[in-house]
Length: 624
Image (spheres, rainbow, N blue to C red):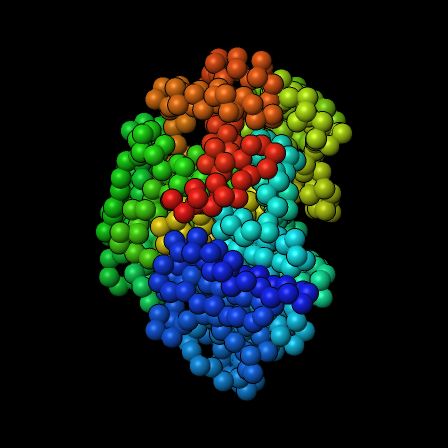
């Protein structure tokens, strides 16, 4: 696992090496073991490496024969051994036994089509010297992040993290107000947008090709929830899922450094731990975190799974004070506002894990594939609830009333858990409002749902949108940033490409039945786990935010949001914001937290609201 960065100039000017060097210095937490560079007058590629595979001879950048292509790569390719064997039959000679070298030889053989052959998680940059072409690409699900921007001199610069990218002196740091509006709705900023107008994210399953001063986007893979296994019985589906999941775990046990698992106590991580424990001879390490509030504490269940599987278990408790003490560091690592409080829990779990292991497996991804979120039940019930009276407090009823049968508007009302449109209308300033699209409030999901109308099944359509959007932009970025902050490589067997391509083709009637979420996965899990785990009600990894905001954190949150600096930001009408903050209750918890995260991000980055100060931003990052 690594952090990568680089710059390419399409003109006649040279690329200053110090710019990429600075970015790599800001990515040391992603790769503390080793650094490497590839220098050409018009190109610099850099990497910070965490040694997991090829500890002795796995240095990067790597080159194809005659250095026709050069690659820096963040991630793991789990089928690299079989790919290497095929390439050797094709006449390729390898200098190492690493997946990185497989990538560059495979590109030399197949070009961009090679991306479809990679089974794993990755963000990579390949420089093709023959065509003077730079390719930036991410894995199918979007487990590994990659950001880019065009420079004022006409080149392109990229980095694994936004915070490193904006240290480049030619990056325009003007704030993207549409991105802020989306953030205030969803609590994340979806790709390709970032908080900065001129900085973009590479989308999952996508290659960005920069050649002769032009940029093209090539989507090589996406989630497809078209039902494809109608002829199979449920017993046959269960058997195939079992076989694919076992194989997905098996290939993710490749490691030359200590390996363990993150164990929440829920079904998904417990299932992964149980399968792992049957493959590893020695007892493995598992890690859990909890809270004093028992409604958010799953430590007893995690300990039950640990005892059942015979793991060496470690756990710790998070307090409000400890959560707030690390939040600024975590927010700087994200590089833009990110308001999922569960990131705090994820951060502490990985910090605990790093004391014992470098690689950790997790159960993430199952909720999106197997219909595990409570919102799917709500969404599935909507057609039978014409008055939607039972949904109060869970969806934006005003937005829902205007949906008029539009599935995208209906689902946006479910998915919006930051600021509802009614709150936005109340507190937005006229100036901020004037910079938003004329059709505010905007249906941001309309285009996404427009691409899957052929599915027919509304629940499958929602799950496909989630996997192509919510999964990478909300869940996987959290896992990546919170783990790499501690130099931990997290692997997600549930998102193995072979498993995903099979499970996404299973009809929703096997996943959500009689109000039971993930029914078919629970049937698989019965082989590996006790009924106390397979039959328990799902809990998402979360923090007791409502209680914290009402008690120990209320003064801090209010002071930040009502400071002179915050009130002069320009996004909100002070006369409306002040009473909203002073009088917020439990139902406003996520809205208030979302506002706090936005303001705290501005403070950390020295931003006025119109544009950021590069000098202050870089200083803040260096101090972490």
